[in-house]
View 1 (cartoon, helix red, strand yellow):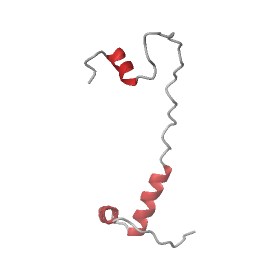
View 2 (cartoon, one colour):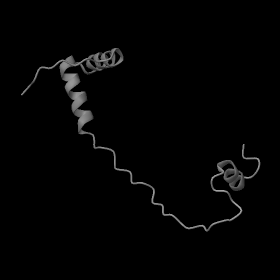
View 3 (cartoon, one colour):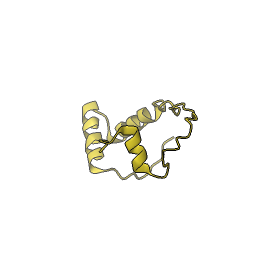
Length: 82
């Protein structure tokens, strides 16, 4: 079964499909169908799981002001962190 539809292609895509059609020696319609079929039959990329991480209590340091982001960065990376 075949269904007629209208598709708007970008110029670069149109030129590549035309070139592929000439290379294959097939019609524009056959080339489009084959390219779409090939793209749709490719397996979906594997699901990437999130990196497993768990929180660890590091204790409270009374000399650190946890509201002072700049001070925390300096404590963690040193005074030359910029």
